[in-house]
Length: 105
Image (cartoon, rainbow, N blue to C red; front, side, top):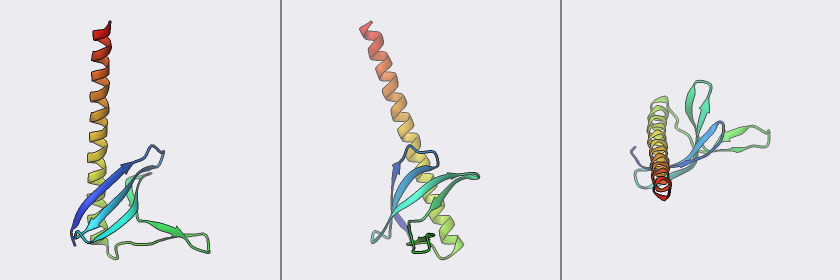
């Protein structure tokens, strides 16, 4: 199994940090995986739905620890990369705006 694409959609929320879609072997997509900030750091929550008892059940999930760890590492690494790019872009835009304001003065 190879994860061939990871798309991260950053969210501005206390615990929910991002939604993620992954593509496996260019053939199978899993949407709405969540990156959540927990008490012990970031973790990945697989897509789920509420059942009649009121609890949530995963719709799709790895069935062994090795695969779960691999998917989680890839997702969290990509999340951090996208977050860093967004922060760098925001800082760059801020610097450009400051420079334009100084020129206008």
